[in-house]
Amino acid sequence: MVVRRLGCVDYEPTWHAMRAFTDARNADTPDEIWLLEHPPVYTLGQAGRPEHLLRDVGIPLVKIDRGGQITYHGPGQLVAYLLIDLHRCGLKVRELVTLMEQAVIDCLAGYGVGAERKAGAPGVYIDGAKIGALGLRVRNGRSYHGLALNVDVDLAPFSSINPCGYEGLRTVRMKDFGIADDVASVGEHLLAALQRLLPPVYPAGRPPA
Image 1 (tube, helix red, strand yellow):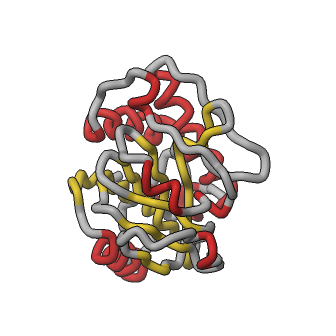
Image 2 (spheres, rainbow, N blue to C red; image 1 turned 135 degrees about the vertical axis):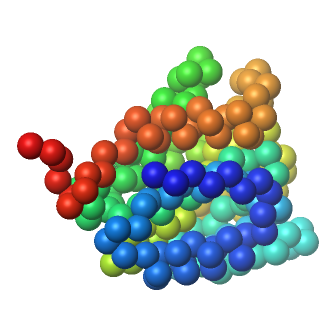
């Protein structure tokens, strides 16, 4: 597993880099996790409805190829992109989504904050308010995009959208629960949770005898 800590990087070049990596990889290419932040940007999934952007507040909107509706990325939000060969790991897409949600739940539990899933609404929630969003694209059995966890991000831009397509959905951040760690520190805790949960990858795709 290769881990790249990219800092704060523009959305579109990073998206194109994920696609290029996925297109170029082969059966022996190590999986990667990219940890980063983005400057302010709204992203709209491939089946997303533009009316979920409620008003123009000067934040760019990028139409992309992940699943899901509209969300916001900005400084203070931890983004983890998972570039995973699902076949090699023996994972189905739904299993990877569940694994990502569990990693966020485990990360928050390490800070003493209880979080949960919500049936029919991918992501991670605290008392009905969303703190972690997920969105994936899988091509040829290989994933890209990933998850976003609100650490100390400005929540105001979420009020100009229906987050993930849900009208009136509240969003929260770790800072609201007295957590002072910065994005980089939270990223290491989330990374550890992901690495604990992801299945091992063996040469030739099978464990040793």
